[in-house]
Image 1 (cartoon, one colour):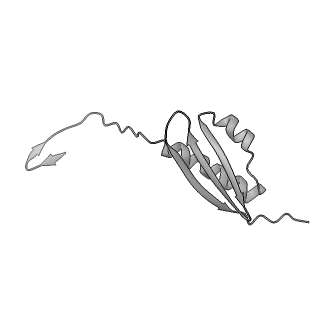
Image 2 (cartoon, rainbow, N blue to C red):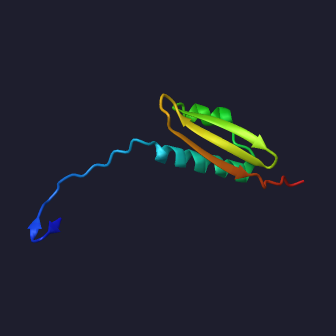
Image 3 (cartoon, one colour):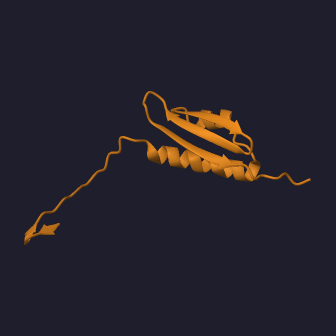
Amino acid sequence: MTKNDKTQRYEKVEAVYAHPLGEFIALAMQIVDKEITLGEFNLILGQFYNPNIEILRIKAEKTKIYVLHKLNTDKSFVFGVKNLFQPVL
């Protein structure tokens, strides 16, 4: 890095995030994918494969609200999915 004709070199740079946003986004993408393709996300399997995140689902008409809560922290992620799944008869 160069500033005002002074150059500094860094061998290693690390980033530490206090918020589990990456975990939340990855799980939210899985949930949305299952809701779109199957019409329902399996909460039992979701909880089994993500033991450190509590998954809550609130149903309201054609919308489902999901709350992802990282256990032993105050971190949560809330999102909604509008169910447009129509089974083929």
